[in-house]
Image (cartoon, rainbow, N blue to C red):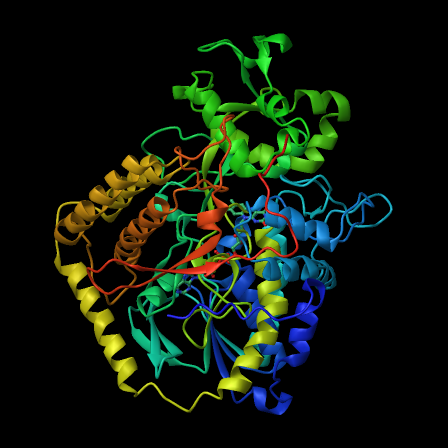
Amino acid sequence: MELNARIPAGPLEKKWDRHRFEMKLVNPANKRKYTVIVVGSGLGGGAAAATLGELGYNVKCFCFQDSPRRAHSIAAQGGINAAKNYQNDGDSIYRLFYDTIKGGDFRAREANVYRLAEVSVNIIDQCVAQGVPFAREYGGLLANRSFGGAQVSRTFYARGQTGQQLLLGAYQALERQIHLGTVTMFPRTEMLDLVMIEGRARGIITRDLVTGKIESHVADAVILGTGGYGNVFYLSTNAKGSNATAIWRAYKRGAAFANPCFTQIHPTCIPVSGEHQSKLTLMSESLRNDGRVWVPKEKGDKRAPTQIPETERDYFLERKYPSFGNLAPRDIASRAAKEVCDEGRGVGQGGLGVYLDFADSIKRLGVEVIRERYGNLFEMYERITDENPYKLPMRIYPAVHYTMGGLWVDYNLMSTIEGLHVIGEANFSDHGANRLGASALMQGLADGYFVIPNTIGNYLATAKPAKVDTNHHAFKSAEALIAERTKKLLSIDGKRTVDSFHRELGRIMWDYCGMARNDAGLRKALELIPQLRDEFWRNVNVPGSDTHLNQALEKAGRVADFFELAELMCIDALHRTESCGGHFREESQTPDGEALRDDEHFAYVAAWGYGGEGEPPILHKEPLVFENVKLSQRSYK
Ligand SMILES: Cc1cc2nc3c(=O)[nH]c(=O)nc-3n(C[C@H](O)[C@H](O)[C@H](O)COP(=O)(O)OP(=O)(O)OC[C@H]3O[C@@H](n4cnc5c(N)ncnc54)[C@H](O)[C@@H]3O)c2cc1C
């Protein structure tokens, strides 16, 4: 397998411009002759499908929800970054680039990140033109707030529902193309395999989730915008349906999987409250603009928060990171919260919680300002916990939130399979080992609206894919494999539910490949996961049949993939004996407990190739070359 990142030559600031000029174009009249499959209708997939349709390509777009507008992107709360510098507080494309590289602990590719920062300004213009109701200041300019890891305010937002408003913008654009006939939408349809012909991606196999029908779809190029795989941990802030099946099946067809162990644990989520839970709820990072994070100074202090005087509180983020304070990046803030809880100073049930307190800002700004900024988040918190955050501090704890790993892509967003492109959270992306807040929406829309529409044309014009149809034996054999797997899942007739296996897998992952990892724990996970997977294939119970809506069957297929992916994540985490960003190896820390990188040995992207059934994966390395920023120990003090 060759890892050629295809980074254009020339100075950083000129690469994208020059590349766009040098890329081959498809004549407008020829675009409709090409069919492009887009799997996913979130911000990445929705933006890509709408834009490619508008360009004139013949697009087929797939999602497993009943409507594209229910993609998980709708859950995004806090905002989207862009280097507009409306605040005149020193922001620039270069600063956004620099913050992202540093925030990712120097494990991202410079050229891609610079392009992301460049394109960020276009995203805001496009979304405003679509009518996305971003918050505005009294003078009419778009408002900004701050997010972690940055000392400027560059986050554009629509209250606490930015993802929903952005998705509605993309969805409108998509619906327009559906109406015009350039995009055909396939809701309630799940991609179950990728079809390759002569080494290129030429289509997908899908299952209609309502009728159970298995179908082949042929195309000249395939784009996956299928989101992240945080649900491998069972409990996460992701939508329950989010899964890894599309990218995992592509991996098994030959697409390299990059940095699978890079997971983001978000510091501000509502703590787990018991075994009954199947999902965790995020409290947006934007809350850290006005909320102060603290725990009691004394271990085991059980007094109500309002009874604990100021002098007996430890505002640990402000104490440890005076420059960034409560807006320290997510990986750092999460570990700091874990540390105080491990010391016995955590609050709430089981001591796994810290306070996020708005009393000071309510005093300073008034309750109406706080309600205006975060009203819907406060309401959500109250509904879940039955506590009023205007009166009592919120209780928060870190939870799995985002996956920086994903399918490896080159500068053109093409995977190691010719013709298979990957966008949004599904690719290994631009965030290195830790994503800064409000950068995922930016990346998804950058990929979908601005990058892929250019690079797909270059691929089609250069590769000139030959005509094939779904009668090709590659489609037939892939369909047969899906039918066989489905039959097998339905015939096991065991004693345990899919969920019980998923919950147990999640527990193993959280305990051994979660916020802190070590050699012994990862080896233990690598013993436990195959044992549990074996049991799954012997003892799972999948009721019903494959000829109608069967959610247990859907889940079973996804959990089977999570088992395999979980193993790869642990292998990756075990091999990377450094700490970086969200990947914290306990053996590798600075004297004050921060992540200690090992640039000499690990300044690379770990891209794993499928080794075959029962064989270990094969590690390929893409060295990361830093020509514009100096590698340094990350500090937010
Ligand atoms: C609670 C929460 C809040 C967040 N807030 C923010 C924020 O404020 N700012 C920010 O920048 N980021 C935020 N994020 C992260 C961000 O929302 C996501 O990274 C981003 O929306 C992912 O977009 P996507 O298009 O890549 O994938 P998704 O929105 O997850 O869409 C995936 C699409 O793929 C489809 N799909 C998946 N698999 C298949 C399959 N096998 N077959 C057919 N279709 C398939 C789905 O149906 C869906 O349409 C937040 C995340 C969470 C969990």
